[in-house]
Length: 97
Image (cartoon, rainbow, N blue to C red; front, side):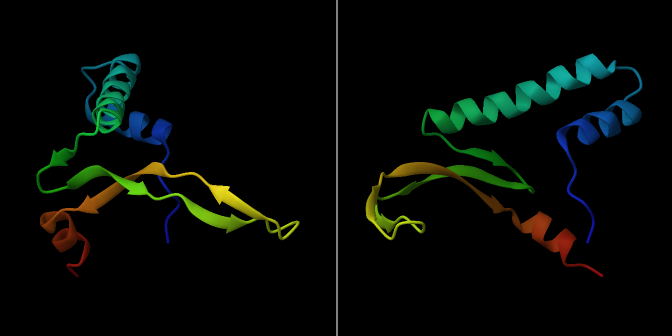
């Protein structure tokens, strides 16, 4: 299994593929894309990238948990968590031999 691609590796790869843009310009574009996805999710929206997948939020309800160190019961607050569902085309690309 390959190592995960980091943000800086993505920027380097895009800079190599698009030599007409500086690395700073590519970094700005990547920051803008990630920022827009985050902003949309924060407002409760979804981001659908056709053929790739959909980013959305899932709500986790408050629950009772346990402190593993002390065994004490604690209340874990509800929260929103990001969720990604891959698109049909991405799944097909990943599962072809």
